[in-house]
Length: 116
Length: 112
Image 1 (cartoon, chains in turn orange, green):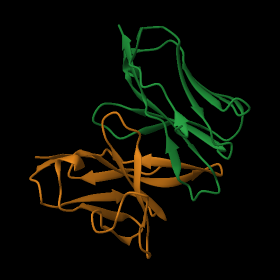
Image 2 (cartoon, helix red, strand yellow):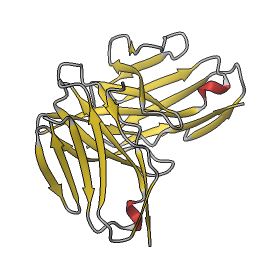
Image 3 (cartoon, helix red, strand yellow):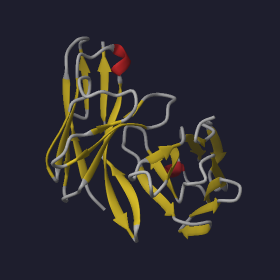
Image 4 (cartoon, one colour):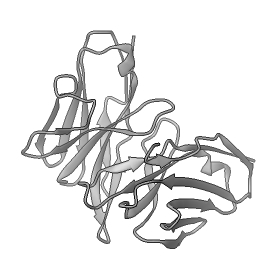
């Protein structure tokens, strides 16, 4: 399995500002995913980030609000732009790992964001 | 109707009990099924995965998949206080670019 770290682990931000979350993996991986986890809701996929191509965003998420970078096979960033209190959530990155022909996902510890 | 339904609980059991956690789904294209455990303030960690119907056992944990009923279960035997966490089911369709569909998660408390 892969070991994934995220920075920052938590932050409290003011409305209208932006925060960039970093995700570092100890192995080279093709696909990285960014999720949002809000209280009482399922894990929601924001976008899929492949190295060397533009991120693919899910319905309801746009690049202007959640720009993503994927400069190499071990690193990605997610920026939450022009934040509002509704963006308060846990943000998680994950990677796909193939085990016995089955794709599984491994997660970082998450970034807990509070927007005031 | 959501693609994956999971009762959020909370579920509270005494130590040593057998715990049954369940998810139902509507998409017959799902081929692989996973259970994740998430402790408070941590990311989800993979517990079990299966790629077919039937049972899979790993220590005190048994994952069960019934594709005909579109129903999956996770059983925990001899539950311990350290099993207290949120358990999320997830499932995927190989033709859908490795995207997983998630349940809400069931909050479990095992009381000493």
